[in-house]
Amino acid sequence: MATATLVSQEIEEGKRLINALNAANLSVDSALWIYAPEPKTWRLMLALHLGLLD
Image (cartoon, rainbow, N blue to C red; front, side, top):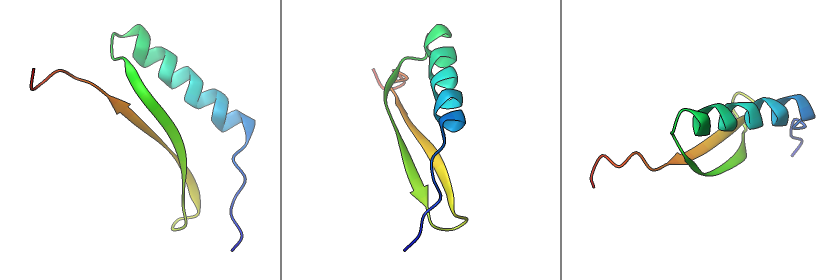
């Protein structure tokens, strides 16, 4: 099965998003890129602790 290549521009944009969220006090606990076969794109998945249930 062929997949699209994750390019450095997408990686850099993901880093900028994570840095912006961290600067806004929305601490990113983890992040990963996952390939979605439909529509054949990469998605950046983020995990944040929002403290809503604390």
